[in-house]
Length: 155
Image (cartoon, rainbow, N blue to C red; front, side):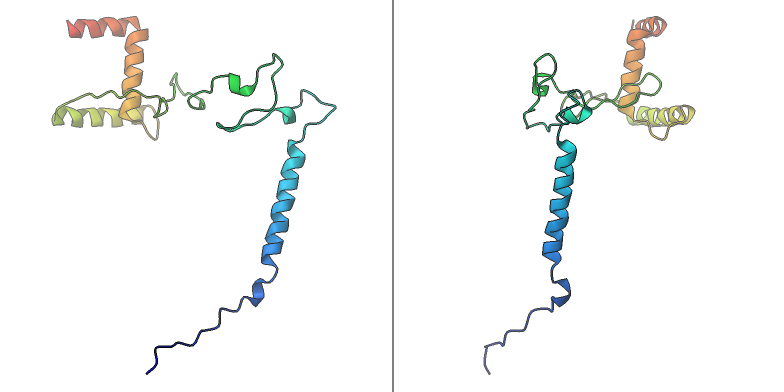
């Protein structure tokens, strides 16, 4: 008995002839179209096409009217979303400061039921504890009767 094997022929790829060239042509055409869209128009200096869109680690190549580039401006930590009902979006995880509140198991269950009822009353699909606590703290800071009621409870 011999351990030598006879090599098998590879799969028939005859139906894929020219696919790599076709893919290269499609990509080149897409890059040309993107480059054409990105070229600034000489007759429109304030055109939106002239604004440089940069990533975080890429230097802007155009200057603003006051001579500062886009990288001179501080970047927001997170894009601002539309706020509903006076809400502000939560801070990004990298900018957030952790806050831990310890409660006993019975109180945790009551808080969960209260949040579910609050979510239903607000006609929202989701409401997490962190958002509710942030809004309660803002309410206590901004609304004087709530602040006074909190002080009365704490003293």
